[in-house]
Length: 294
Image 1 (tube, rainbow, N blue to C red):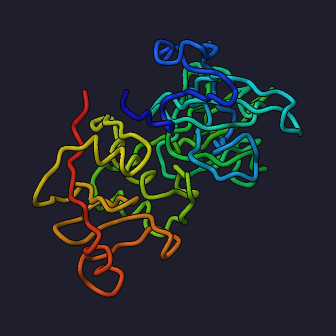
Image 2: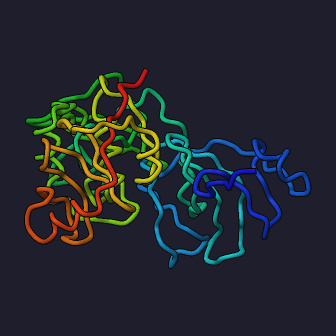
């Protein structure tokens, strides 16, 4: 039996549980019964059911997850759940109170890198939460309404309603220069997936699914993305560059956009140029091209 990737395959021998797909390999373990839920707010997924453990990824507001196992009361305050993000199959632990969101109805999706949700249809109103690209909210009306100078969507939030500026749902250009401009200098955040903070593979995931014409879905981590792309010898703009535990987006043959802990933000490097560029060049594993998707 090949070694299982426990980032995406749910088996925990300490708790004696296994996902249904692996039941045959672990007949002595209790088989879990997954159910689908939705993230309420931008939700951190941790390595362990403990808020002090590292964040491994994030779920966006309105994003679907699969609850594999609830661990109520074991780690106060409140309970935790072992969950899987359905868009890329990644496993982590999330607070139960972050899984209370209903399935988005007639959803409107945030298209800009980052935005805010307001308590009233005014840019001066109280901010209820922040939203990253891909967050989905249930609309309460069939179209946005004008309030003052701007159009606003009235959406469901918690037990009440909130307002999202119409500009937040207008998709930007999907070209690479615009993408790079939108995410350049974004803070680096381990496990982050939005322009509020992201890591290297979170950035490449955003690039792969940047618009309606590029529906490719990459796995979560750099090594998984390396395995999922088509190797190329000479990179073109938009191809991915892979290093041990790292990935970047090529802007040309040598220039690369990447989220990195060296600068703690998204920067542009030239492979082979300068001290950092030479280190990157020395560790280069190869280039990969993202498929066009279905």
